[in-house]
Length: 295
Image 1 (cartoon, rainbow, N blue to C red):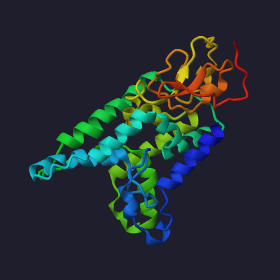
Image 2: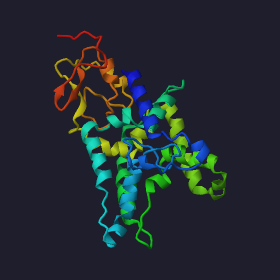
Image 3: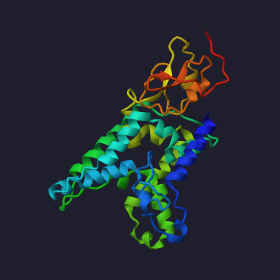
Image 4: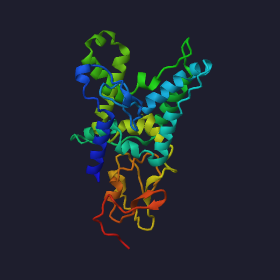
């Protein structure tokens, strides 16, 4: 199942970044596909991107909503909000484990041989603060003299944007290097921090700082596609504790907001106590069909 998931992650990466003419055009793709919302964190300004990032779009929506209402346009961006809500209600943070390019990068970096460390559980709440303040409140209320806000998270934090857009555009358009300053150094430092941290710990950005993951996590108890714990089969052997890339103890918290439905716990479980559930209906154990069910 992990191999299948890697192929799905790679496929989503290629779909979201299908503009491979950028080495020639040296510009950001602006074609008709750019109206499509990517389910994972994928920067709009990446020269290869054919889709846009839901977090970036949400910030742009909130940053301009005051001006839109004042000019009578009444544009509130139901498409962006609706798309995020539908994806969250259907699969929740499964997006993080199956369709996010930056999540895939962190997983690959974690395979590099090195000492491995856990992530302090308390840091998981930082991403909710970033979602509330930098994605919602600041773009909405910290406005300039013209009534426009700024995409604070994209501008000051997002390491995915620095990696996918900032660095490639500097290579493609050398003239941009004259405008580099402290802001770029700040974002580059954040990127280096999370890339290095990903080698030492599993998915640190997903666990501590991703506002999109925080948004999808809000649907953990009501999402249609989820992993289900069969309490009658579970022996609390803790096998699921050691394999989870998000630090979830599934036997203790089956609806944990950090779960990305990667099936690592289901594969590790020797008693078939963790299985896929869709709309409340149990499915077969697709993660480890070779295991024999225990009575």
